[in-house]
Length: 322
Image 1 (tube, rainbow, N blue to C red):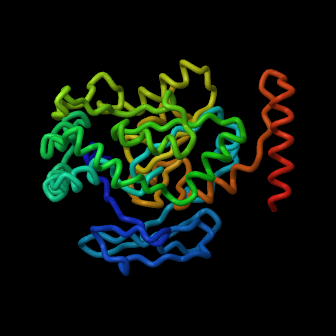
Image 2 (tube, rainbow, N blue to C red):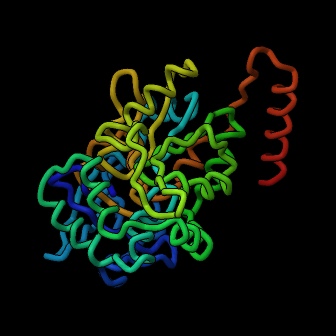
């Protein structure tokens, strides 16, 4: 959904990390280099310590994009390792797909939604308008949604399960913040072991007959700037001092503001949005970069003996697994 809410963002589909393939570009368009210092990504070559070159393909051809934020600074690493919480975008970040596009295709309206999306890319569209317009193109019924959830289980991005487990083992609280739909995100949260109360997402509404009614406009994520509001609510409610937002798009970057996220990590393992990636505190093409940089951080909360024992157990288990 990200492309609907901002203009001037060149979206590039990223290939090679899995068998997942874009429906927009042939797999031969980009070439993967596994031995890159910049991370597991597309067309990445080592030039200098803080430089990364990515071959970005589009309909009109290809070009080389230069990024200088693929290697984190000491300050960024400190925030990442010692933060209180991490909030993840879901579509094209935690999951390989864009949920609403997949649901539209399942309901037989994939082409119409894609065409509307292409038109919307020409200018800035308020998120709530974009969401309502796309849903109106196919008006999914409750039975269609249930069939979709049964037949199309979520496809998680490589490494996300390990990353979430490691964050939680280090005492870092994990949240999912999405402009997608809670009904489709609940199964994802269940796989990752993230409690329902840690999900901020939109809610599809249906009549008692199962007919599509709309979406809950009271959810902060149903509006432009909603992710930033959700992050601010999380920090205020729990007293978190440092929080990281991880995502692929402009609405994820918007969460990095005073009172909101203290750091934005752009995940470009599925889609690379150049203008967003360039502004990130840290650009990664694989969750392995985040996993390897995390390490194990012991946190004895409130002097709890149980927390200390748990931390020692985790460290011993990690050492034995090497």
